[in-house]
Image 1 (cartoon, one colour):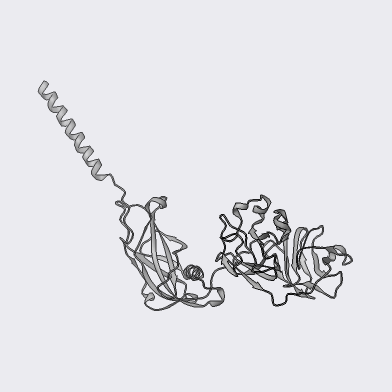
Image 2 (cartoon, rainbow, N blue to C red):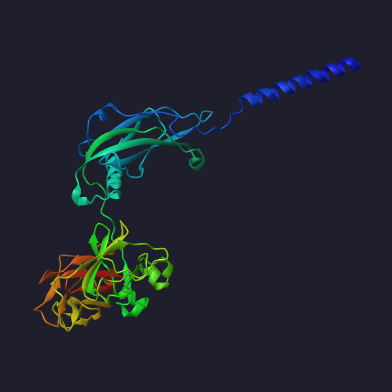
Length: 383
């Protein structure tokens, strides 16, 4: 009997050992493949130059990367751009994702946006388009829900395209100037000195600068909280170079090249600035600039304050809807500015036209800005 018990115990142990071995053999182990370990196949059409403006989509296929076991894999296309096939932009991801490695279809609108972003990064501007470009493509693959730990990239394929500028316009931002030229570095006074949008993520301000520690730049939020650590400026304090690099970490005060009339331009996209000296150093002077319109029956003026030479500001509240108004000089219609413009939080800037249309505005409180040299105007809603 004892021998039978011993044999039974041995048999049970052997069965358990075999089961454990089987479990280990069938239990999958995750292994992340190396970049370039799986192949991306370009569509045959890429043997020719592709006109992205007149195509709908491109379909790529790719070998499945080996993670050690079968699991849902997400595939996303990325593109880099170059004109000379030597200097390349960073990789630009598209929005389309796919779980089918045999048919990764990407709209050419997304490819065009990626190529445009890359060429803009390399210094091209909207006016330079349409452009011929060399394009590199690769696939970014990862296990669903595990992007941070399982990302792997295919090898690259290259082809040529032509494309128009397909990015949406950069949204207008509000940047304010603080410095020696604006009430001697008073923080809240910076809200009276708004930089005027120029398009293409560039902003400018025209006045007579002091020639010494003229300015830094910041947002409304940073001005209200006096957050100097977030201000934009130059690398070296008091730098009066005609052009320079913008930083917003330990930024220093930018100085104009001399104490004269300049246009200061801040390029947010390229994080740079430049000074352009005005040819006319004796622009026409006005005693006053004011608002006038149907909000006061066109019978009175809301006077503005000249916060820097030739830049005027006022905050005012309209208490009725369907407001129409203009800016005018010296309380007289001989010099007035208008525009075919309906003010909104997205459309808060316009170029004034002498004797132009009435400006339209809804009820509310606004900050009003106008430069009587450049005729640029801004009306910013106060939230």
